Amino acid sequence: MEVKYDYDALAQDGRLTLPELPGLWKYLPLLPLQQEENIVSLGEGGTPLLRCQRMADIYGAQIEWYIKAEHLNPSGSFKDRPSSVGVSAAKEAGAEKVVIASSGNAAAATAAYSARAGMECVVFVPESTDPGKVIQAASYGATVIPVTGNYSHSYDMADLCAKRFGWPNITSTFLNPYTVEADKTVAYEIFEQLGGRFPDVVIIPIASGPLMIGAYKGFDELRHLGRVPAQQPLPAMVGVQSEQCMPITRAYLNGDAQVHCWDGTISTIAGGISDPLVGYENDGTLTLQTARASGGMMLCLTEGEIWQATQMVETKVGYYCEPTSATAIGAVSKLWNEGFLKKGATVVSVLTGHGFKYTGRRCNILQPISKVEQLEILLKKTQ
Ligand SMILES: *Cc1c(COP(=O)(O)O)cnc(C)c1O
Image 1 (cartoon, protein in one colour):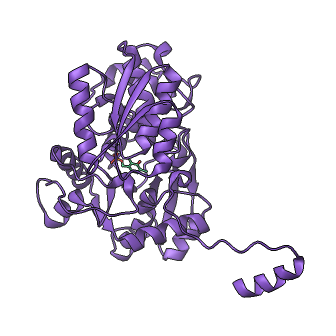
Image 2 (cartoon, rainbow, N blue to C red):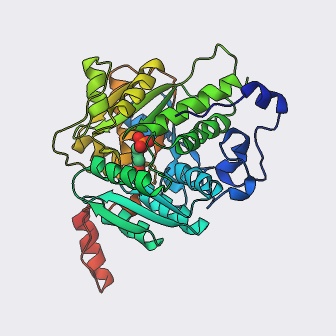
């Protein structure tokens, strides 16, 4: 399902933003909620767009490069956008309980917004979900239920519960049209933060792709509403997957019209985008079509490349991020070397999730010392 608006009426009305409302809710006229009093907000949206020239120089990429810092949302990922709108819509519909399947971040986000709304929340997560995210979701008071197998099994459980018990399903795929609508606000913000213009390329980590499709719709709406000239091309949308789970990228590379589910075993540090799409392959096809139609593409990174990109953004920018989101950073190196990115292009990488909840890290912690003399020896050793 896709939400349609009467754009002519909206354009005539003039008040497309309501600056007095919090975060992404300032775009309420373009969001599918009837009553302002049903807004469930924790201050999501309005995240920084940070120029990262040093990293571009290190990659040798002669581009104007920005990070959209979505990990700085209240629960630590962009999923706060779909969860805020999804839970608000559920509240407006009179629900007292919601259900969600998640690879972790959406679970934490929906649990947080349910707590805020005073609603119950049932969460299904794959058994392999990072404990950092499981603990976070449970801490907000949600009932968190691990499910054996990969993400698609959790997806099925949430779907069954929604059908059997009538609970609104907030799963951030294409099941719930309200959640995809929320994702488009990323595009509105990028447009405003660039001073009222589109970037040339937007790079997004992809599970099934609602963030990419939502953002693309956001840019398209800005054109519909006359914010840019009608002939202005939309940004090229580039999606990134892990080599360990890349059903959409595989279809792109093969030139296939349709995406097939991923049946290999999955072992990746990019847990937020390891969705094999079993039973909802069409979601992947929709994303593939959007990447192609926009003049963008799909690519994948190896585990080593993902880890390197994580360290790059942490040591050269100062943003602490989960490896999943660093795929949008590592992709730039590939895209520049392959000639996809043109000299002088404006590029936005969406950093989707925070490093605080990623527990898979290993790093060298130094031995404790008691005297300053030891420090000199220690510093010589670490040089
Ligand atoms: C969910 C998630 C994604 C994938 O987003 P989709 O819109 O489901 O494709 C990317 N990065 C992080 C950190 C996520 O949690």
